[in-house]
Amino acid sequence: MYRNLIFLFLLSFQGLNAQDTISRDWKEGPLQVSDFHATGSLFGLQASFGSFELSTQSYSERFGDSIYKVLVVQNKIQNSLSWMDRSADTSRMLDLQQAAFDLFEVYRRKAQIEVNQESRGFNYPKILSKYRYEARMQVQRLMQETDFGKDQKSLQKWKADIAKELAISPHQVLPKVKESDKLGLALDFGAEPQFYFGEMGRLLNPSANFTMGMALKYRKFGFWGHLSVGQATLKQGYSSDLVEWGKNRGMTPNRYALSVSYEVLRNDKHSLHPFIGIAVIDLNAGYEHSYDEFEINYHINNYIQIPQWQFGLDYEFSVLNYFRTNNPYWVINEAYQLRHSLKASLFFALNRNAEIQGGSINFRICYSMDQRPLSFKP
Image: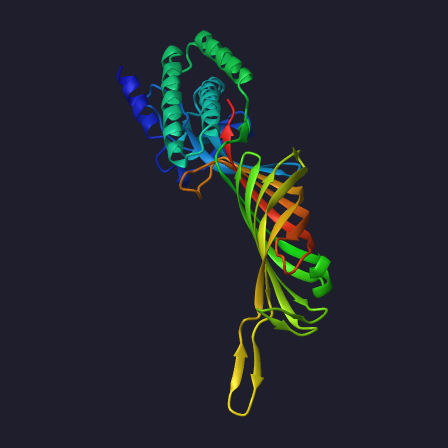
């Protein structure tokens, strides 16, 4: 019994000062005598001791235009805390310690599967602690039942059983994910040339606008808000009860739009989103002033607002998909997919104003980022 107590004490000591030790990963190959750097013995009861540790590390893997950012569970021998009596049967000791190392690998893979299903970072230490404990208890059984490697028949049975476990469990599996039903976010920015028609076309030259949009995404729906800011000039003079504009006058045709889009097509590279919405175009000629003998007169009533209907189509070409299952940035710690795309849009804006008829044909070319929360598949 006292041998077991001493062995448990050593096992409990394994994780201490792990970062100060030299270590080697299980996947780098079988153990060698040179992996045991420390000197020591278990009071003559054991000629070797392997200090194995499960830990986690962030890891990125790329497949085509998709990058997976995940948390990988690692299984390492801590060389500086492991010893082997060179005067003993090193071949037998290596067999025993390799079996223990392989046992830790069995539990590493179990931990990896559970980590892959968990996006809440505060649960990772609990998962790791659970499988460390189970691995160490199994190593204790291995040592007891094989009499620290002296019972070769029992050791060979353990090795065969462990080999079966490793054969049926994957070495490393990226988590299987799907889009969840929670709200996502999208952002785009770019250029938006506007070509006016009808009375608007007779009044204004085409304008080149900067545009920026933001959306809430739910399933295939997108609820967008867009702001478009630009410069244009008047082709001819215009006057009404509100304004008096001269020919060639500079103009800022700013647009504020709300729209709803629906995803009708999506694959790895392409997606289509027809949309419909409302907008207001703000035709603002800025301040005017005139001089007389006594004062400077400012005229500030130089803008009109025109409500519009708008409808069109967005086309997105995906350039990069970024999947992250261990998200440290959100309070809710959601796994997410971030899709980077080039977006081209064609839409029509029709004036709902009796005074100035017509509207505009608009092209929008944007860089788009679409972040969708993910859920895990079993």
